Image 1: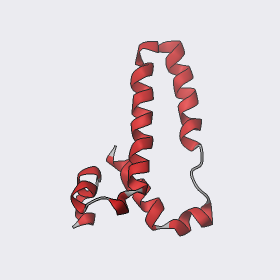
Image 2: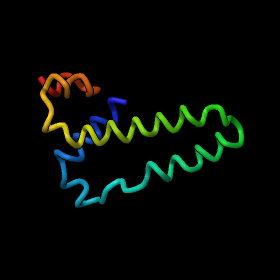
Image 3: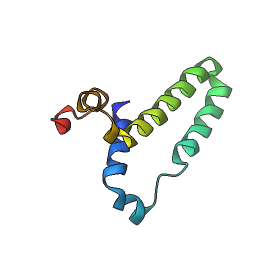
Length: 86
């Protein structure tokens, strides 16, 4: 999930990307809908795990957006790229 934290950091630090190309908007929801539909039809017992995974990804992204308020040690722990925070 560290990937989503790092993506949140990038979106915050490079705000010109969003103003130039637009934000991701509801892309996560667009991806999730067919996944949930498929799991509902073929593997309903996996639905809770898929929903939890999606919620964790969104939470990691939001944490990344707030990384400026966290201590460096926490950012290192949450990030995929530990050396960035050195």
